[in-house]
Image: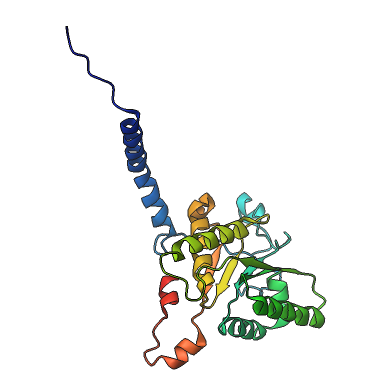
Amino acid sequence: MTATTPPPPPSLLFFNGLLILAFLSIPFLALRILFLLPPLRPPPRPRKRPGALPSSNPKPSTPSTPEAASDPDDDAAPAPPTHLVVVLGSGGHTAEMLAMLRGVDRATFLASWTRRTYVVSAGDALSAERARDFEASLAASSATTSSYAVRTVPRARRVHQPLLSTPLSALRCLAAVFALLCDGPAPPDLVLTNGPGTGVVVVLAALLWRFVDVGDVAGTSRVRTVYVESWARDHNTRKHEMSQKGDLA
C-alpha cells in the first residue's frame, strides 16, 4: 500500500490566500500613497467659484483648440455649488473658528461657499447653537441664496475616557464622519478645522476619501483640508510649537 498525502486543512488555504492577496495589494497601495504626497500629486484643476475674484490673465475670447472649446470650466458654464465643512468644538475652538469666519467679507463668503456644513460632537449643544446664530446673522445681512446644516457625530474621545477604549470611540466617530463626507451629490470642497479632537478624525476621513477616490490620480479630487492651530496655543507657547493634535493632522 502506498501512503496518500492528506489534503491541507482549509484554514491553511485561507491563510495562504490572504498572504497572496496582501502581497499583490502592496504595489497598488504604494502607488496610491505616492499620488497623495504633495511632491508627486498633480495640482488640482482650478475651479471657478461664484464669489471668486476674476483672474488677472483672462482666457482668450476664441479657443485655440477643440479641447478648450469644450472645457467644462469655461466662463459661460455655470459654476457648481461649493461645499465647506467647518469643524467646531468646545474649549474655545468654536469661538475662534467663528471669529475667523466673521473676518471674511460676508457677501464673498456666501457666494464662495453656497453649501456649508458645521460638524459638532455629541453633547456640544452650545457649538451647534452658535453655528445657527452665525448663519442667522449671515442671512439677515445678505439676500444670497445658500444652505447650511449642523451635523452631530459621536465624540472621538470623551473627557477622562480611558485610553484603552479610545480607539473604539474614535472608529465610531470616523465611520460617522466618513458617511457625512459621502452624503450629497459630491464630496466637500474644503474641510476647515482648528484643533478639536473631532477635527483630527475629520482630516483622517478626508484623507481616506482621497485615497479611495480614483479621480484624485488625475488631480480632480475636491476634498482639501486646512488646519489652523489654536490661537491660545500659539500665544502661550514660547517656541510656537504645534500642538499634539496639530502634529497628528
